[in-house]
Image (cartoon, rainbow, N blue to C red; front, side):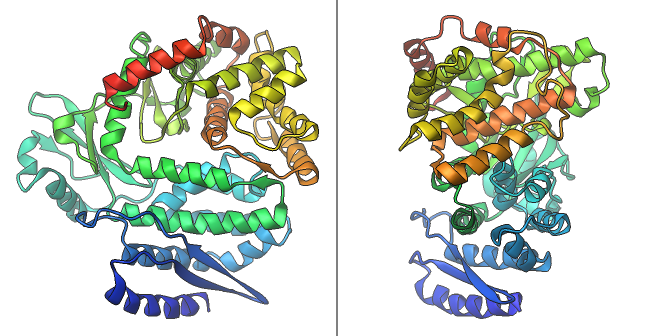
Length: 496
């Protein structure tokens, strides 16, 4: 019934496409639900470059909406929608089916599901748990696609620009896949190829996300996610620009140049385009492989991860916004870290970092007024004393490890599976009474990245004095210094 209803709408729109391809028009797909009904609207994106054959096309958005709709309907979206938006506790089997359907869909919606799952208690736990498992390991595209992509980006003689090029993908993700190659100077290289029609996929998937979260907002009422969606949209659009990612890579090599234990790949600019990025190949072991290593080795890896994330943040107001375990490799048996994937990098206004530091100091000294001012600096609006008290519950949890001046694990006696669950539940319940709270854009990836980093610490079972490390990272901190450093680094990377 879902597919039949969608096919009628798609047929109508196909006729419109032939007549009005040049116009941007909203797309509507009807999903029939027993006893009720709702519509998913593909939001109209900004105009795109008509000279680009893979631009954000209306026909591409229609096809994407139909494909994702078919996958989700096959997974039992009708029942998932009832449990997700009807107030029930949900069903783990349906959540697993939805996660599997998103994996089949490949592209932004799968990545969005990962992003949304890291915002604590935004979704019911069954869905958050399953979406969090989506580590973007989609099946790779075949050799015919690879040849078409490489020819389109580097010309008909593209194979001659490499000494060797692997036909099989070494890694497949949500937006693209990686092939190993050898350059003529003997260096090993990684070539990341973007999947076709991803611009249309981004706009289609974001349109569906807007409506799904809008329905959740009306049913739940604890969080206004409008700014969150805008932030995710901007970051996803940036992730499609591989030329920008190459600049992010150069930026990180610059910012971390004084950290000899951290290695970032080097972009090969003459073999890179907006949809192909070629970089030096890095070899290392997965972080998971060190879960049973001696405690001192795990602690050393965790300390290196700390500097990988906090040094750019506190010195340049820049974060790596996608810190899941697959984006790190360990080298030398625990002596070094490789940092991978620079598509999702967030460059903050320096004043925002001051708000992060001010909130840390407010939590450290239990200063309510300072916390209030810090939330305002973060961009929270329409604050009241009651709302700030609720936000402080979450802040004490997030800042807990760096406030506590002693050697400890992140969870500190709480099982990894339960860590943060109680606090998240309490915050959500309080926000239903006192809220909703509108999440500022800057908060989204700051919170996501902090939680992702914490997840790595939990996986390693690291025991460190996080307070002392954080204080060390703040030496010489001032907004003016951060602003000057950031401006210089962005200029050198071509991002100014």
